[in-house]
Length: 115
Image (cartoon, one colour):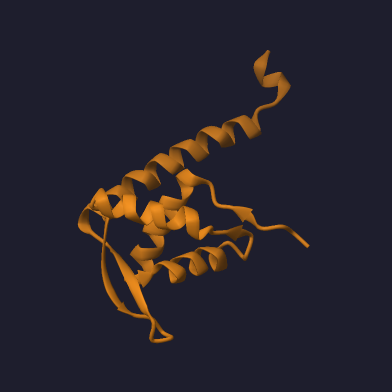
């Protein structure tokens, strides 16, 4: 059985923003579960990492929140993406694509390419 990996700090913000972009307002537990589901249950989102990130994203204006009732009728904080958050998501997406392209070059590199 494959062990779940923790989500890397830098990538978690991107996953949260994209999740809110696609699904709309969602509470923290819902965001964590959706990220785990999309990863095929290969990632584990630690609540101790998620909530400080949510606070930081809210302080930066990327997300906004309000209290509401969850599916189980419990009081929960629901987060939504703001206009600034959409801009940040696009900038982060472009940066991620550039970084992934650079890393891909290294995996494609062969010894004869260095001669």
